[in-house]
Image (cartoon, rainbow, N blue to C red; front, side, top):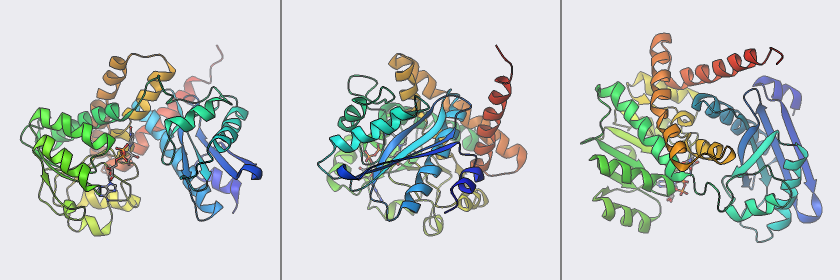
Length: 351
Ligand SMILES: NC(=O)c1ccc[n+]([C@@H]2O[C@H](COP(=O)([O-])OP(=O)(O)OC[C@H]3O[C@@H](n4cnc5c(N)ncnc54)[C@H](O)[C@@H]3O)[C@@H](O)[C@H]2O)c1
C-alpha cells in the first residue's frame, strides 16, 4: 500500500498508528483536513479483515466528516479513528486507554467521540488519558434526538423542492430502522401528521414503534418497494444500490443513515430516475452539531436551532445541483470544498 499516495489522493493530512500488543490494541487515527478547526470524528471499533481495509475505512470516514462540518457551518475539521478488534470484548479499559494515549499524542488536532462498536463507558476510559474526547456522560448526552430533528428539517426542505411546500402533513414516509434516530424521527413526523410505514430487523422494536404511532409495519425487504412519498433510511449504509433502486417507488430519499449510496454512481442514478436525494452527511449533521455545542458550551436549544439550519443548507445544495446540472451528492461535495477553500484563504492574513 502506497500510504503517501493514498493520503495525497483525497487531501488527507495525517495518519497515525499506535500499537500495544500486550493488551491487544491496534489503533489508527486519520485526519483529513483541519482548515476549519480541529478534526472531529468517532472511534469505530471493528473486526476489519485486514489492515488495508481498516486504513481505507478510516480515510473515507475522516473525509466525510470534513464535508459534514463544512456544510453545517461548523468550525471543525474531519477526522476518524478505528480500533481493529472484536468490539464485544470485555477487556475494554486498556484498549480505550491506549487509544486515549494516541488521541493525546496529537495534542488536540483530533477530538474523539463514540461511533459503531463503542459506548459512553468506553469514552470514560479514553478520558482517563486525554481531554480531547466528547460524548461523555453528563455532557451533551445522546445526540440522536438532535440528529432526528435536523433530519426532519432536511426532509421539509426536500418537500419544499419537490412539492413546493415544506409541510409533511399527509405525506407517506417509509422509515427504515426505528432505533435511536428513527424512532425520534417518527415522533416528529407523526406530530406533523405524516402517514408512516416502518420496518426494523428488531421485531419487538418495530412492533412497539408501529403501535405508538399507528404506523403500518412491513418486513425489512418490503420497505424498498412500497409506494410512498419519502423513503427515510435510518439503519445502515449502502442501502441505495442496484437492487434497491430497481424497486424504489418514492419521490424523495431523505434519512439519517451514514453512507447511504453504495457508490457515487447511485447518486446519479437516483437523479436520472427523478428521485430527489438529500446527501446523507448534509441531512444527518445534527449529531455533529450536538457535539460541537458540547465543545462550545451551547445550550440544548441553541444546538437544535443550528440543526434546524439543515433546511437552508440543503436548499443551497439543491440550488447548486440545479444550476450546475449535477446530482445533489456531487453538489454537496462542491459546497463543502468551497467553504474549506474560502476559510483557508481567510487564514492567509496574519493577525
Ligand atoms: N445517532 C446519531 O446521532 C447519528 C448521527 C448521524 C448519523 N447516524 C446514522 O443513523 C443511522 C441510525 O443510527 P442510530 O443511532 O439510530 O442507530 P440504532 O442502532 O439505534 O438504530 C438502527 C436501527 O436499524 C435497525 N436495522 C439495522 N439494519 C436494518 C435493516 N436492514 N432493515 C431494517 N432495520 C434495520 C436496527 O435493528 C436498529 O433498530 C446509522 O446509520 C448512523 O450511523 C446516527
